[in-house]
Image 1 (cartoon, one colour):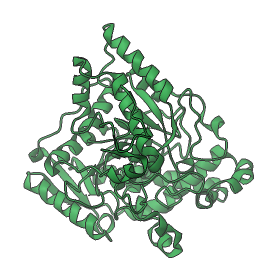
Image 2 (cartoon, helix red, strand yellow):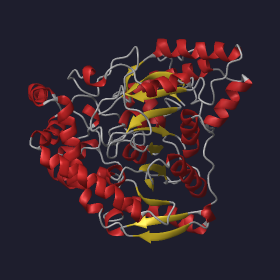
Image 3 (tube, rainbow, N blue to C red):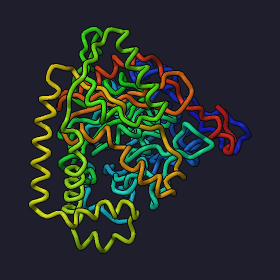
Length: 481
């Protein structure tokens, strides 16, 4: 496939290979030889070249190696070897995950390669499944947004593609991965989620996100923010696509979406999860819940009184475990090179003693047991993912705004993380214009496939989601869609 000339006046932007389709259709086309891995990879690289100078979703683009991988996949398939549903599919990986042939910065100017190590077993599994790695996506420093929805002073903040005039936060810390998926720069992307980092950017960028259960996917070769709470996850266009990825990695068929009338979903602690929603989040959430009721889903209240206890315990675990990995002396030596908000938050780990840490870990265990009891009798819980739509980046220059909103990005997502559960975020804005909104599904630990299947049912009930208009991002580059 010939790459478009970026200097050609109003040249055509190469279509997203997934536009109007799905991973399943892409796989059928690949096997029917109506497309090839090289053609798909060249298309995504052309879109990255055309759009990402403005969007800033990639830290590193691995064009040469991606095309070499794609050609190898095409030759292997032509020789009669089929690696499965992800064979030849071009993807992106968050830049806290080691990938051979590319640096891993973890969004920082501080060298932390020794804490990450070489390429790990999860990336190895993706490669064995036939994935083509386009590059590494941007993250705020150490996958920690410092309460500012992925704004970082040491790396440019990716531009949320839903507003070309005002730069809006993409959510963090898997910000680059979410923007890349939303803008059609990859078929799906890998992110990580410790407290919100897949689900919040999924919600704010209008894509699907999966936070896996801690321990489901290995973390060797991944920057350690908090080994007790860190999880890998993914961002995709749809829950159906995520189901294909999850099944392929597990070596099992994609999960079947249950019939709506078979589902009993819980609405937890409305005073916490449903409080202070902005008007668009409330309207989209109410419309989605009404649609689910209309389709026959049973929605029942579920008491979860332990939820407000999450914040202090979780902050202690993250800060203490980060500091244990980084080391006090090393942190103090490099702190001046870090984003000041990130550094200030993680510096709390300097003051957390053994007793405080043990108490926090005990709180984690007790909270997890309580959450399991609260979820008995329902298939999953549903809540808004984030209480507000994407704020403008410039808003966070106002300290009062920061103080009011710094915790909202993780308020509804932290409980699932600290309880050791899996969770998803579905875009629920539908085809109506406006900034994206997410609906969170929380399911018991290691029921990740079930969570994705329920999310697919929600996807079918709520209806097709709109995509961002990328034309305004092309005007300065001489492209049009």
